[in-house]
Image (cartoon, rainbow, N blue to C red):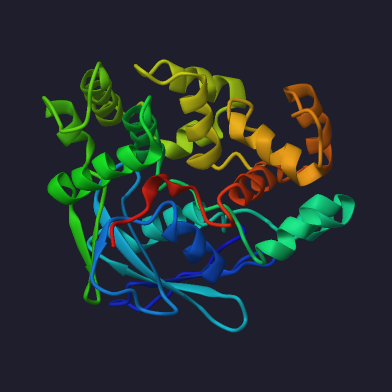
Length: 313
């Protein structure tokens, strides 16, 4: 495991993560503010990044306060009852700190477009969904509506049905656990078969069919096929989960049309590239093709993260 280190005191609820390669916690925080931040109450504490999520497997609410020192080491303080080591591993995955990033600068030297992206977003690594379950739920909630509408539904679901975590005075809300989805009969804003699909998603999660690390260990096609067996999860949804919850670092999102627009803009292409040209261009991005794709996608949002999980002010 590239990121490592956990404090050993009997009463300690802290851990350390040592990034391999350049990393900026502040850059992650900027991305989360416009994408993946948990709905929250209270003021942000400058210099801290707060996360709240359900722990892998056990679905125990967990909160963590993260800071970074001058040497680059990230320290986390755990809130809630989830085991510290479990929270450490999950936090590392969420922040892409379980990936060796020492070869990332070389990609920028090979491809000047990537080099400019690295200068635009210094120390950036993609911030992933907390687990495959939440990413799949988002895919179902957001289908056929705008990101803003979907985020309003998801945020209301967190506030009304999710567990709350207090991180030294900052209240955050986790996405509701599978038990809620299983028994949900309706929810404002959900239409068509979305409730049915979310019921089935909750059942799959409780049955152990949506465990993040086992899915992550599967070969690509096997993982995608497994995800597409979930009701309502098609090609786009399975790729979303694979790339942004399972952190498939060297894979490309071929079902994301806005990526092609971003590539066209960044490389000055006319007309917009097709998937074959994308594959050809992306050969220079190895072994971080997903990282480059996320950076390119960010350029369409003026550098912010994806807007679909902005917390209410």
